[in-house]
Amino acid sequence: MKFTLQINSSPTAGQNGFYAYRFVCELIAAGHQVIRIFFYKEGIYHGYRYSTPPDDELNFSRLWSALSKEHAIDLVICVSAAQRRGLLHPDEAQRQGKLDNDLAEGFRISGLGQMIEASLLADRLIVFP
Amino acid sequence: MKKFLFIISKSACGVPVQEALDQIMSAAAFDQAVSLLFIDDGVFQIKKNQRPDDLGLKATTAIFEALEIYDVNAFYAETESLEQRGLSTQDFCLPVKLLARSQIAAFIKQHERILPG
Image (cartoon, rainbow over the protein chains, first blue to last red):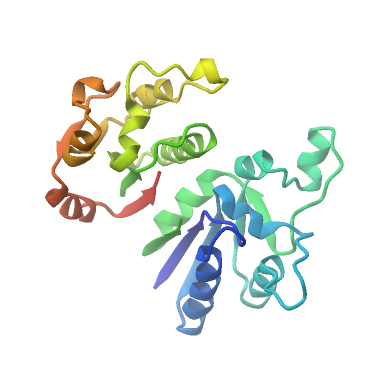
């Protein structure tokens, strides 16, 4: 089955980010297809390159990057949600006259249309609020 | 075309409602059938006579009212949520159809893509 996910919660504010990650791992293990993961609202905090939790805690940016690399998962951060929260990739930073490069490996920045499109291509849309 | 339902259950102003509205407008821009359901404190989002300017906030009720331009005109609210908050449909800036709590689950099932507002 084809899945699209929307993740609205940050890795630190509650457990939903963790559940989302585990859910995606299980989807892959069960042979399902993940069309796209769209990070929206506080979910954009999963995509910060410089998240540096202590070594004995989970580093979500790295976990997602590794998952994307291994299984070619499309990780999309919402551009407007990201800008509101200070996550800028170099192009956007330059456009705004700022110097920044926050986006972790394997993520890309795009708009809400990508989420709607992916939800139409999927059999199931799952939202982690 | 898929049937999208956005369930708005919180009264939070500012960014939370703006980000909900952005997603609602995106779905509508993709020519999808979009419905909005207001439950719990979410019913306050469309209450008339708000004065957000006083607090430096944007008038999001105006955006709700403008959704019609995007062909979004299916608005629903839960009867019990209104009653518990002393509201009636006349307090709203949108023409909402009322659904009883007992009808909500079946109503949600009629939709194919369900998102929190």
